[in-house]
Structures are given as C-alpha cells and as structure tokens.
Amino acid sequence: MKLEMKDSPGQLVSVIQPISEIGGNILSVIHERDPAVKSDVLDVQILCEIPEGSLESLLARFKERGVNVLRIGEERLLVRRSVILIGHLIHTDISDTIDKIDSTGFAEVHALSMIMPAINEPSSTKMTIKSDSLANINRALDILRNVARQKEFLIIEPLEDV
Amino acid sequence: MRIAMLGLGSVGKGIARAIQGEDLGFTLTAVADSKSGRIEPSGIDIASMLEQKERTGMCGNRGVGPAAILASDAYDILIEVSPTNAETGEPALGYIREALSRGKSVVTSNKGPIALDFQSLHRLAKEEGVYLRYEATVCGAIPIIHTIESGLAGNTITKLHGVFNGTCNYILTRMAEEGLSYQQALLEARELGYAEADPTYDVKGIDAAIKLVILANAVWGMEKTLEDVEITGIDGVTTAAIALAEEQELTIRLIGEIIPAENILRVSPRILSKSHPLVVEATLNAVAIDTEMAGEITLIGKGAGSLETASAVISDLIFIRDCHGRRS
Image (cartoon, chains in turn green, blue):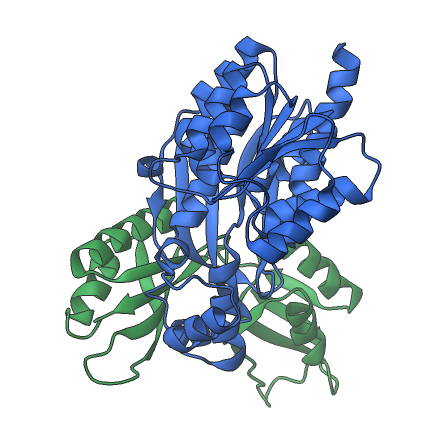
C-alpha cells in the first residue's frame, strides 16, 4: 500500500506500529526522500502480511494517527500450514519431495528446518507450505500425505490452523 | 440395592471401600477374585472380607466362582471389574451377557467387552429392561458418558477429540520438557508404573483407538470395530520433532478424533499450540466435545488409577439406583 504522512521525526513509527499491533508482518518498506522536493508530506510504500480480516482495523488505526492511505495494492490471501516429517528425508530425494509441492502451481514449500541427529537415524523436518487458499493448501497436504506413504515418513499434521 | 462384584484388584477394593464407607444404599452380597468367592445374601462384612483378602490373597472360598455368583439371585446389579482382554473380551463378556440376560443391571470398567460387542449388549439390556453402564471404560475419572448423555442432552454432538491415553501423554510431555529420547521417556514411565512391561497397546495408539470405538458406538450408535480406526502411534516421534514444534510455541500430542460427518475415526500424533486446551501435562486426559448448541466443552481429568476408576463405577451405580427408584 502507498501511504502519505507528515514529514516530521518519528512518523514512520505511526505506520509500523499499527501493523505490528494487529499481528502483521512487514516484508518491505520503501521510503525515499527526494531532497529537491520541498514538501512537508512524505510518501511511503509498504508491503506487509496481515491476519485475515484485519485490513479494516489497520486502516482505522492509520486514520487515528493521521496517516493517509493513498492506494491499497492487491489483497492476496495467504494460507500457511506447517507439518513435521520424520524419516529419511535426504536419502529419499528431498528435492523431489519439495518439487511435488512446488510443481503444482497452487502451493509452494515456504520454509524448511531440519534436525539430523546422526547418520542413519531418521531426521525430523518442519515443512511450511503456503498457498492462496484453504482448498489449495488441503490439496497440497494430500499430495504430501501420499509422498509420506511412499517414502515411509511419519507425517505429523496440525490439529488446527497452526 | 444388592451388588455382586467380579474382580477384586485395586479398582474392586476401592469400590468395596466406597460402598462400605458411605451410606449410598448399596449392600455387597457377592464377590469373586481370580481364586475364590463368597455369596452372602444378607450382606458381606466388607472390612473383614478385605482383611481376609489382604492376609490370604483370597476373598472367600475356592469353590465359589463367577458362575455360582451369576446364577445366584443374590444381586440386582453386577459390577464387572476383572482384568481386561482386548482381543476376545472374555471371560468378562460372558459374565456381562449372562447377568443382563438374567435381568440384572451391569456396571463395568472393562474396555474389552464394551469395545467388541457394545450394540448386542446394549440391545440385550434394553430387551431385559435393565441398565448397562460403562463410564469407567473411557478416560477414567472424567464423566464423559454422563456429560454427553445427561449434561448435554438435546445437543447433537458433531465431533469428539482429545487425549485418551495418559501413558503417551506422559512420554510426550517428558520428551518436550526434558529433551528425553522416546526410549528414555518410556523407561521413566515404566519405572513410575505409568506404562506396562509391554507398552505396545499404549504407544501404538491401540488403547486410545479402543476408547474411540466405545465412544463412536455409544454416542452415535455406530457399529465400529478397531479395524475402522486409522491408527498412528507415538513410537516414531522424535525429540527433534518436538523441539521443532516448540520453536513456534507448538507441541505434539497423541490425539484421538471422531468426526461422524466425515467418517473420521483417527488416532495420530498432532501439532497443537501450547495454549490449546487439549495440551495437558503428564498422565492427564482431556476431551473436547463439539456440540451444536453448547459449542465446545472440554473436560480434563485423571484418565487412570484405581480410585479414579472406582469413582466412575460408583457414579454409574448411583445413576442406576436413582433411575430404578423412578421406574418402580
């Protein structure tokens, strides 16, 4: 979104704080000051992820702080699910496992963290998948369940949306 | 009302003491352990019977067994608390069937018969106009059956899920708290008496699955067996997996769930937020009941133990006593 605010010290905080208050995550901030322009307002472009349904409350908070919203870009729904896989993930071609999700076009592996205790012992991996809808996340999880069955991983799924 | 009891282990002893200690309106008229038994239609002196059991290992005479007790007309309610057999349900299944067909109500803590043959036992009890109660078979002291049948009467139950096995919960809790390996945590559970010498039933998720079968058949009138449950145990869960979950304030618990609309009967290790109501510590059990009107109700309590099981049996006895009064 593109925002406009007064050019005085500490104003950037009034943009950042509301986003963190609603549990959002800032991906990038573009804040360019052109010395040639002698204006007392400042333009800021911000890219952020916020919890579903919280946009209205974010806009209200901006307004309270005197921040003008010039333009809101495309609002895209983002759904994430983390599962834990236990098994021989590396020896069963980890890139193939990731590719099974990434090649779908509707979901992708967003993060991976792995603990390998010892050679020949099963590794434990937390895999986060993201997609633009709940239905697509569930399709991706179905694919992952099949892969887990074939490659003999234990798959631990979330009970709820975590 | 007159009570006959089959089984005098720690649960049976706890029940006998409760009957003796409080004026609940029950008289123990017959009792059998694995070696002996006694029938005294005028009422057994519980203190001296327990003292004899302590001293000799036998509660009565060798010649008196379950068959003689069941055939006697010295009781109105049979309490069946003998050791469970998950494969055949016997001999308890036979005892329960016989008592019901003789027109006696039955209270049991025995999972085997209830999981294997619930619908036919239930029908038999109905035909005979007597009660079959089994609160103690699921989640020990937690009054899950009473809550669903009485407390939430009129509600449609849309889903049940929870922690149904204290042994698994203890192992997972210890792996998370202390970073113990699965084997170390299992060993500790055994030393504390929370796990059997052969822990297969618990750690493979079979015990939790048996409880799901009982609930599915009792709450929704399904005709499920153990084969209908999708089961994954906790024996493959690594300490590293729990550590990965903990990085995000999450943890892992063995969860049993029944969702009739989706035909789901499943036991599996799952990732939950640490603040989730089902994330209970040590050997506790927890069940969340989803209903149409009342929303979600979560019950937490001790899932095993002799006094806890005795509590569930006593509550069933009192239920029958009160219903009996109304009926006659």
